[in-house]
Image 1 (spheres, rainbow, N blue to C red):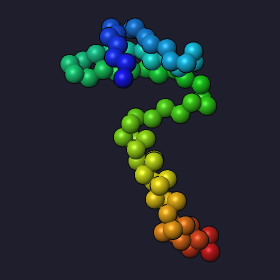
Image 2 (cartoon, rainbow, N blue to C red):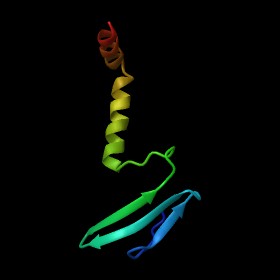
Image 3 (cartoon, helix red, strand yellow):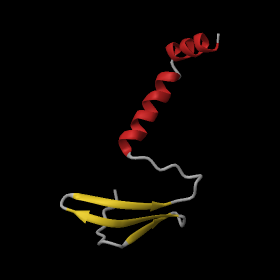
Image 4 (cartoon, one colour):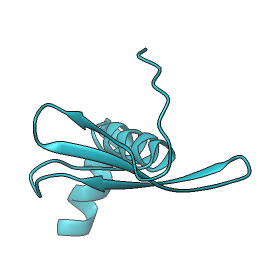
Length: 72
C-alpha cells in the first residue's frame, strides 16, 4: 500500500485519468472528490463488497433457480 500525505485542495492522479482531491478535513473525517471517466466505476468499499457478494450469490444454483422462477 502506498501512503501519501495531502492537504486540503491537494490531489493525486492515478493512471493518467483518475484524480482524487482532498475537498475538506473535519476532525477524523476526510471528504474526497473523485474525477474519473464514466467507464471507470467508483464505489465506496462497503458498497463494492455488497455488489461482489450479490454477484456471487446470484451465480450459485439457488440464484439461477430464483432467476428461472422469475422468468417463468
